[in-house]
Amino acid sequence: MALSHEEVEQEEEDDDLDDGPLSPEDVLRFVESVGSVEPAKRKLLMKDTMGVPPEPYDWPNICPLPGSSRDRRLACDLYWHQAYQMNQVSETCLPPMRYTRCCNEASTGQQRCFHKPRPILQLFSTMVHTFLEDCTGPVEVYGYIAVRDDEDYRRNYLFNRSRDDPLTINSAGDYLRLLSPKRGISMKFDCLVEVDIRTKASSGDSRGDKNLVDGCFDLIEGRSSFDVLSRIKMEGEHGALVFNFIIFRDSVEATIHMNFLEVPGDGFDIKMCGYTAIWKNLYAFIDDKECDCNSFVSSTGSFSQYFVAAVQMDDTLFIDFMEGSMPISFKADIHGSEEKEYYFCNSALVSVKVSWSTVLY
Image (tube, rainbow, N blue to C red; front, side, top):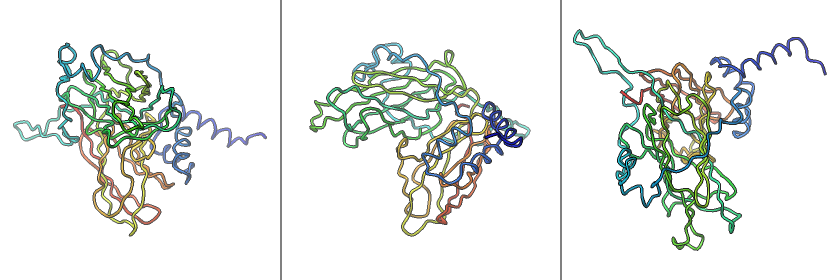
């Protein structure tokens, strides 16, 4: 069937948009064209419509640093142990939103701001694969993934499950349900990814637990590819982890808080994702497949969790509740915050506040 002149022009226009940055208006038009579909399908359609790269750039497989097993890295007897302060096992105490406003004032009383966008690491998802010959069904995994950056070299957890609270996954390959980082992860200098993921023995005896991946690798600022959706694989004794991430060169930290103003009497479940116009990034915030977050809203008030994301400066972050309605948008900035309301199809009402900050002074 031949296409009309108008259809050809529209198809060519969409192809051009797929190849280049989008405007906020383009994104809203695409969202409207996707309409109300099942959330997983909606996400796939958004990726296709916005021109998100189908496959990340593959880094060479990571070799764990020497002396990085959990039995060695706490000894602090190697140079890199000391540089990353591996003997400190506490969680970072630095909060997000540390620089949502500039407090520097010249003696004249005029405000002077020295903050600027900085490199930030954004981890989008992590897949786990097991190499267990005696297992073909679901397995329980526990342990942690944490990132240490030069802000305080303490653990910023992305996954953290005790043996008493394991995550059940498909042994052939499945997502680890990730936590939102406590704050943005600075890549102004090097950072270190610390991994200890194990399987829980079905017998209940911890002596039967197996190491999937155990070790550390560092991301070197001077050797990294910036602004490219990337994939990196780390193999271990009985499994492998695959990380999808970006290191943004000039980005800011977005912190998302929600306050529910109206909620149906019996409560309801929510899903939430984010995406950007210029850099075409998709973020999973509340997703029972990729995220470790309670999605049920039982009453009015502040949502129990906040979310942190790295957004490239001058881009626009869209917050989408995955039910077919139009998303709400927030323009990235060095400082400040903005609050907008969203009405759900079931008449619930939420106020979404996005606060902008740099991660480094």
